[in-house]
Image (tube, rainbow, N blue to C red; front, side, top):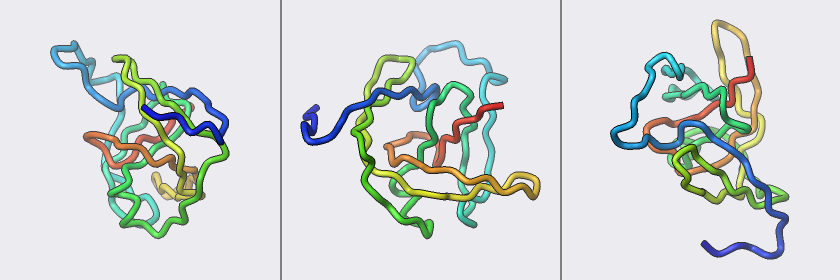
Length: 122
């Protein structure tokens, strides 16, 4: 993986970006469902272990979001040890839950199985 020496580098964490084969998954460990993000229905995983919220680049292309480069290059580590690189963000995306509007910045990342991983701090 080539590192961009012109940007600061920072480490971050995501709990459920990928699934370890043969792992004993607790179905109560994650909350997921279909919600509207920027008025587009998407599959969302609420991740209490994530430090940031993420969106699949294919999904965010359907949304009316402005992209911008991050000030730092992020290296995201998963529980199974994989490391992913991210450097772009969609700012002020909205998610509606039971009539409540939440705003968040979604970092573009090649997510598998979900459109959005929302860092759930609750």
